[in-house]
Amino acid sequence: MIYFVSDLHFWHKNAIVYTNRPFVTAEEMNEKLIENWNKTVHQNDEVYILGDVTMVRVGRAMEILSQLKGRKYLLMGNHDYFAREKTFDPRASGIEWVKMYHELHWQNRTFVLCHYPFVAWNKDSHGSYNLHGHLHSPVEYNLQNRENGRRQFDVGVDANDFRPVSLEEIVAFFEGVL
Image (cartoon, rainbow, N blue to C red; front, top):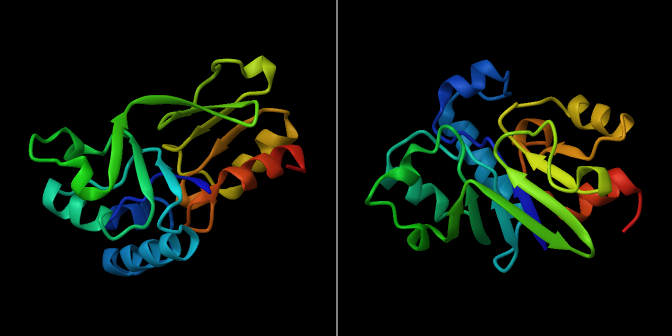
């Protein structure tokens, strides 16, 4: 399976406050995010992380990433400072590659992936999807986009029960069937 996630903000206590997350401490939030991820994702699944994993230093970032199941791909967010450090070893963290932008093609569909949402994206008038994070949207954001005929989906944990969301779920959300 293929999954998407964004805006985990491991160890970021202020993320709890700013986004009204239902946790008291960063440690509690980290535990729940790891638990939800590993309940959802299997070892051979692919997970596209659309940025803002954590703001901590590289060692701690690699430690937490290595606890998460799946083959991981990182699309950089504005808070992923650890991934810019020379000592960051993506492979040691289970990260296959690090990019700013990626297009995924699956079953004759195009998915434009980036941390940031776009006003317009490649093939948007031909049914492609823009998957993003950054906004820390509530669930209503994705519902409004569907109602407006806009195939734009916030894969951030705040809009998706603090877990990765599958490609099949996103397609079914917009198209009703697979």
